[in-house]
Image (cartoon, rainbow, N blue to C red):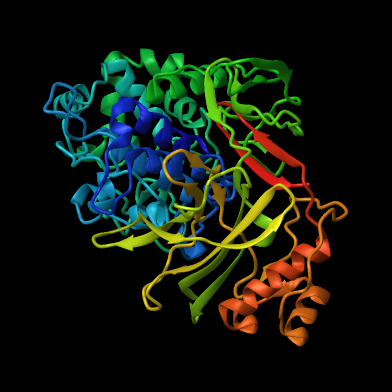
Length: 538
């Protein structure tokens, strides 16, 4: 059930101007880098979708309590969004400030920490208004929605959509849920909004209109003073909710009301073309058949809003410098400098079950024609870190100078060893990002940090294939016992390798064993509107 997560990203990006992306925070991170981090989470099915699929899952809490993670995501989007004041002064709304507001009375419960814990969000403001409460009169609720830019019908639609999942918990609102109006579930005493609280559907609307099942839930049949849903639904004589009684109309209304966009079909395939550094187009070309994304348990959980379009090309033209997808999104391609994932590795140091330090050995290939005599390449890692006052993580970065290791064919291999974390404070488990640059003119594609088991890493990367060696060199000094163990098992620990020289010895020996040739190739994993290049030596 990715619907609420999609809403966060779509709405958060509305209103951002290209000039704003260059703004730098106190940690030296640009707004553009934060947006990239958000997009990366959205397009990673393991980052978000798994915690809300199925909709009945309770990812971060005792399942006996009756908490429902999908409903918590819906609630957090609404509670952050409805505080907007569209008339000015520009505060409130979907700005991630709710991550710092878990102690507000309208945010009772554990939903703030459950949803935002470990996630990266752009905090861009503070909430101006309060969230309407169940005890508010119709006039007060309507005024709050109007301030946030909602018409009367949109107010009704937002409430009907948001209350398709989950319910009200007695532990948070004992004045609403006392057990006398409808049955409860779990040790927290959840009174569900409809008979299918783990399915995003129109059942609640129809149970309200027909007086069947749970009859609209605790905010319709509960104590009169807190019948806020009843007051809102009936405010236009049920015209709006009646129009949502059809399943397809319900879905379309929910999506268009919250995001401002109607659902639309995605193209069967994506078109793209390459462009040389001389401005010449090479193409057009067509991707593989698009597939809904993400998909969990063979079910599309993104309402068709995202599709993945894969393609795999070998670039034989050394002048290719850009790719354009769907005639709308362009990104640079740099064949002169790129990270070698199969020759880079990471070790995570843990204190119990908590990761407190990450150590990297990063290797990159630079074309021999690049001038590295006066300026050495540098590697930068972006990594998540805890911050005070919220469970949301912030982004930090660290840079290290790379040094020459060896020459292989047309490329020179550089290496850097660096670590992040203080060895005490927990580091969130979000993917780190690496990039290698040479001065201000050359930059590699950004790459996810090499992954492996805690304390070890697998060689070679399963994404990459190496062919017969076309270069050779004398074996450098190495520690035979440790390196032979690594070569036999495929796994190696930085702790086993010991000092930096030994780590470098293994990486160079691995080059000789696997073979690294002279042809630059690229694997492009395409999606609309973003793509992630992976370049290696073939």
